[in-house]
Image (cartoon, rainbow, N blue to C red):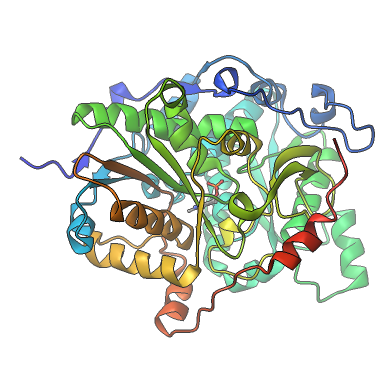
Length: 448
Ligand SMILES: *Cc1c(COP(=O)(O)O)cnc(C)c1O
């Protein structure tokens, strides 16, 4: 019988995450303290992160045990199915096979609980009672409030005010999980109050929301901060998806030739492809294809250099592909793909020439998402539509022996307004003039 959905039995779920650090051909450049330009030491991170996550951030162990209490929560939805997109294959006349790893089946509806759950757990066992974070479109806030509910912790989310007002359903989800949510700028922090005093109508920005969440964590003994992408420990947690895909492909006797994922901060893409890196380094020709919006072309047009992780210049300097921390991307509907930089691990691997990054216009991605919905039935998140577009494009030149696997990072059931705009022909495309990129890059610090 033709198998459409490949379910890995729960007792065969991976029990360790993969850490690519020891296998990188060129070691990572260390994060730097922006004041001294010296490499960051663990004690500088301890006001906002628990020791076990700081240790993971700097770990050189190839495999890291997943704690039993985390496996217990993962079991709510993991292992996630690997699905053959045969109906999409037919519609596009593909000669190859296409599979998608369905991370939309998690309680929060995306891959983000793969890291929110262990982050909440490690904080919990170190005595932290409360986690503070920021959220843009609301997916990360949802994932973290779900995870905090699992371990009886408080969760405080600073949500960019404009999204808070435009996307009320995420707020309702977060509240129902028991989380507290403040539109940012809020009256909860000094940063927020100062901004409100200056401009009572300020609609906020992700940079401002990060500043509020970090201030909240740094000024309270019972609270730490959690970040949903970019950091090494986040990418490590996300490797559960790639490790499961390896087992699932083995179950049906297939071998991946193309691995595709959308890239915002790089965590779902990194989680899918990095477990395949050792075999690629040994000569396996498997292609890694990160897909980004043309409106925020970090990997395809950014520069590989040290930059701040945020607009407010609060974070350490990290070496990554960047469009400049001042870069303000156009308001495309894939809110999760509007970050000016990318995860340093993913950038390291891209810089080694191990990836083939591509960028597409949002209307072409929505078109791909619509075709996916009409053939495979499910409604993808606008972010995920980029991976679908990437897979369809890769299929055009793929042959009968090729196997494309893309990561289906989330569902779009709370993004229907974007589809409405697309259906009404209201979406516009943005391509950055080279001049704007060069201008934004001038704000990067000069680090050799
Ligand atoms: C957050 C998010 C992304 C982008 O984040 P990455 O860290 O690049 O994975 C992509 N898809 C969905 C559904 C998301 O919620």
